[in-house]
Image 1: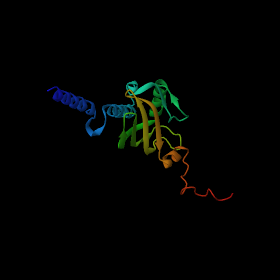
Image 2: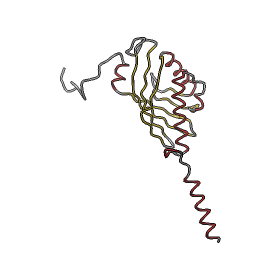
Image 3: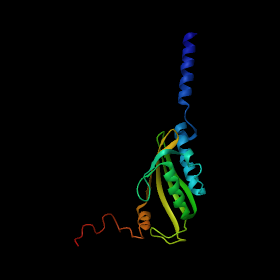
Image 4: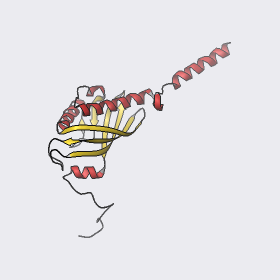
Length: 175
């Protein structure tokens, strides 16, 4: 009898320990991170950054700032509000997402319009860009963030420069 209770107890412990997965195969920690990532995206779409602290750590670093790293939640909130003040009707469409207990990688398609001129566009111009958003998480809050854009979109934002015709185009020609 004691042997059967030990086996039963072991099975229950294993079941409880192994049952930390949520629907879709994510652990509860990874799902919490994904939910936080989606929360940040919603803040951008609604332009309401009042709940940003629910998703981002106070000492977080955004490595995607216009002028380098943005350090700290308050600095991020200020930068995000400034950016979104220059944009109208931003919509995001999640293309693909990967997550584990430490990172969430989300590939987004963003559309909208610029309210102001700058970085290679005029006020009223539409934007249609894809980015890979990568965030590192601890205790359900983002501690670091990176955004990677398609090269052509980056070139447009740098004053309307044209993307080279191909890899290393004209880089071997002598001037």
